[in-house]
Image 1 (cartoon, rainbow, N blue to C red):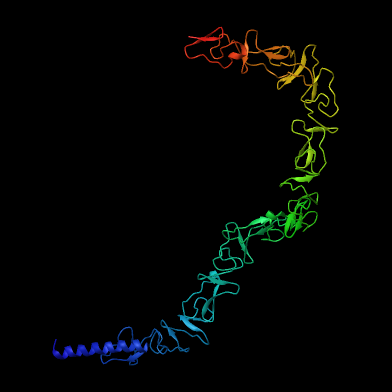
Image 2 (image 1 turned 90 degrees about the vertical axis):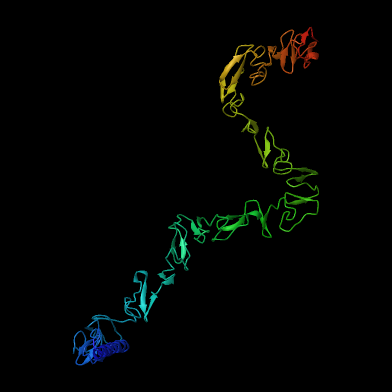
Length: 444
């Protein structure tokens, strides 16, 4: 290549570079360089290098003029007014178009209720942005009432509150509904922690309980200065609220007394008693329990062994021959009452005994399994067993002739090395190892 050709090439390169730089600045057209060839991507249109993709006077091809004055990707974009050309042949209002919001191609998340307003993606009316997403704080269980407020499992969000599907009956839901207070369905008419309204607590330590939706004292107690007391025995409120007994005195039946009884006792006359358990002062001073009754929690009641009150006397209808099965149902002479029924009439000297297996006749004067006098009802001796080798003689458990009762066991103290001696004196006397008991004496 000659020097002239080389310099010509340099001039063309410089011209092309200048053209490219100019296109970058003008974005549309430059004059055709001396070479007569326009640099890419420009096209020579009537002596001018222009970009037919965006030139409204040469849109797509030379001399194709766009009436709107906009050319996009070689196509005229005939947008008017506030509309913008966002793609070939497509006009968009970038102030309100959710697919071209603010700028072409910027999309709002309409699925999450985000729409284009004044050129910005904003949450629809009633929705709030939480971590880049539009949510309804009135119904979103993950953002209930405020962003990030997550309802407990099984609850849903209604009116910005976490609630269950339903409580049923008279119950209502109390609680925040978010961890750790997931709440519960309660009856505000009786719930001590939610009495009348959610969160209203009754002071159970002061004797209050929830009744019909209000914190009230239980029956028998009176509300005095915010505390439930028994004015019958409260020394600070004896008879009426604020009526305090003197130091050392007690309150009995609403009156101060001078006994000075310990806690849980009251003064009856000049004696301290427990009205809860004293059978001569049961529930109140002077109230005596009769007929075998005891005092239980301040009331006269029959004991477990004789649980039925027959005309003021406690008895067991299962075993009482005078009240067998029912009050005043009397068994015939010689009969016994078993399981509420009258049984047998044994020939003398036998008597009628009962056991878990039934009713039977036996002579308690000689029966080692039923040894006693046989008198009374039920007969004395029924079920009384002679043990330790004893026999039943005349209704008494005794050792056979020649034997001595040592601690409940019959033995011959003349020969027993563990009880060696004369009669009862030998009980507990043990011979040394290797010794024998002979005639009541330990010998080697």
